[in-house]
Amino acid sequence: MKRFANAAFTFLFLLLISTTLNAQPIVDSIIVCDITHDIPADCKYLGDVKIKDGMSRENCGYEKKVEEAKRKVMAAGGNILRITLVRYPSTFGRSCYGLSAEAYYTDDMVRTRKQMNIPEDTISKKLISDTAQYALLYFYRIQPPEGPYVTYHTYVNGKKMCAISGDTKCIVKMDKEGPAKISAFLEQNVEKELDIKFGKVYFIRCQAGPGKRYIKPVLTFQHPNKGYYEYSIIPD
Image 1 (tube, rainbow, N blue to C red):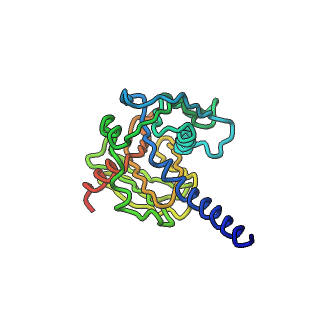
Image 2 (spheres, rainbow, N blue to C red):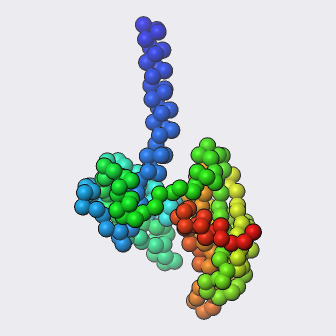
Image 3 (cartoon, helix red, strand yellow):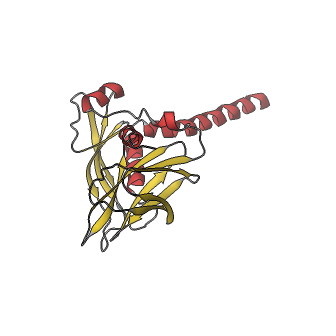
């Protein structure tokens, strides 16, 4: 009886570990697209997904809300998240992002990605190990710069990181997971939030554009494939 109890406990423990280890890859395998993408006719519509903006400022960045939506899609048995509306934070209104989306299921992820012209991430595993206890942020700006030729600094959680001008690139190693504020300042402060996960790479394209009166930084999170290509053509 004792041997049976020990065997049962071992089985449950291994099952729990396996479930924990496999949870993140399942979420990462979900196709994320927006309203500009047409869903192939052979995909099954499962229903709408609503992510409220909420009142708390904790865990309310865009990436965090997308992760929440992915988990809802997974719970519904789907593997495609189509974002139809993004509700942005505002100074005198909502404090967090909110999403409206749709959940779908496809029985062939590779075929559907090709039909929708959505590239797979073929770069991240070349740059970092899945088991790495850190993440990498790639900041860059291409010369000739898009927008006015100005220099500004980028910040991560308020700490100065990279001076951005024409043909700039730098790598920041992140030793802490969780929400991180990526910001830059010229005439006005521009701030975005990333949900940092170990074993991941993030490409931030830095530009400049018109602000309220003069010039403001423009920070864009790029898909790793496109970001790596743009980053790699900048001279060392």
